[in-house]
Amino acid sequence: HKDLDPALLAQAAGAAAPADLDAYWMPFTANRQFKQAPRLLARADGMHYWTPEGRQVLDGVAGLWCVNAGHARPKIVRAIAEQAAEMDFAPPFNMGHPKAFELAEKLVQITPAGLDKVFYTNSGSEAVETALKMAIGYHRARGEGTRTRLIGRERGYHGVNFGGVSVGGIAGNRKTFGPLLGGVDHLRHTHDLARNRHVRGVPEHGAELADDLERIVALHDASTIAAVIVEPVAGSTGVLLPPKGYLERLRAICDKHGILLIFDEVITGFGRLGAPFAADYFGVTPDLMTVAKGITNGSVPMGAVFAKSFIHDAFMNGPEHLIEFPHGYTYSAHPLACAAALGTLETYADDGLLTRGADMARPFEDALHALEGLPHVLDVRNIGLVGAIELEPIPGQPAKRAFDVFLECWRRGVLVRVTGDIIALSPPLIVETSHIEQIAGTIGEVLKAQA
Ligand code: PMP
Image 1 (cartoon, helix red, strand yellow):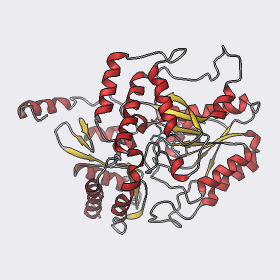
Image 2 (tube, rainbow, N blue to C red):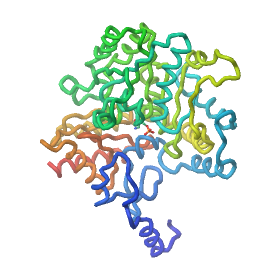
Image 3 (cartoon, rainbow, N blue to C red):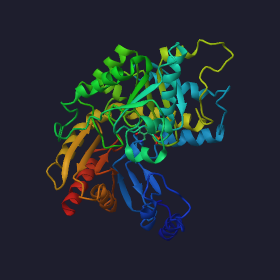
Image 4 (cartoon, rainbow, N blue to C red):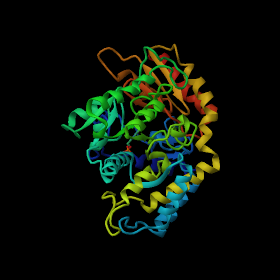
């Protein structure tokens, strides 16, 4: 940009703004409201976005919890460009390409011990569907075809496909779409502001909520239950942390009854908590683990399921010429995604990003908790480099207060995420203390201004 004539630049910036907003039906967006006052992003680098007009916006959410290494990292950009020129696409069924295997080998070196097999998808939603099918198929392959029930959790988010919405626990995402998948139960969520408020890190109270699984087993019998799926830290519904001992207890109950444990690490994977995965952070290893987002630093769509070998091996017992797992996507192991992921892993390793969150967690925590006591702040919570500020809803206008804060932060040059009346933060893992101060400082000013 530096070399460009300012007049030309202004012209180019103007040209980037679309003349007509009608045709694009936007996802998870209030379309009519957005189109009255659109918010557009045209360029990104490091910790920042720029609007088509050239206004700089600090990225407080890593895009959408995915750009963990920051934007436009050279090794990732180069990997994608070179791969596009070398081979754009390769069919993933009955064929392979070297980078798909190379990436799988590299991934299983950084995943928690035992999660040694990788299945590629194109999104978190697809990873969830894949993991749920793997769980049911696993039991069937072992002669336990009655184990088909799936257990999710209230306020869980597992993407938008039918399986994920069914095990998910968000009424707004469920009620519009009919009966969903049968045979699904939900654990209660662990968010309890009466007992845990303004907690730094993992809350003390609520491990016993894992015993909901025992009640479901007592009701349906373990012989009907395939798997339990939870986000170790629920992200999309407002950064809800697992109480101390909760995940251990869930793991123990699953083991007792032969139920598979699935961690949905689409947000927590790839360094968000200051450890490579939440499973590492909490010292609890699931049987299946879903990832997406950070696997390619958000650059090319990709997701994956990691499976313990015993699950994979259970599928491998039939005749050799038959397909063991009748499932997959045209774009599984897409060459551009594999190249992007390889560039991403290199970038994470170069900068030590899979554990950098542990170093930055303290300044992040301090900056967030300095907002306690500001007008309408009900709760501040954090873990690693993810945090949330929960606000008191405006009576009769749920979600409006936080949305207004989001809009004003955007106007003041900071991008945050809003979910209900909760402001969520998850900056790129390259974040510096000055960025943290800008993010928390801006939110603080906005809360005071809107009091
Ligand atoms: N699971 C979790 C835990 C997520 O946070 C998300 C996305 N926010 C998904 C699944 C779905 O991922 P995608 O939007 O890539 O389908």
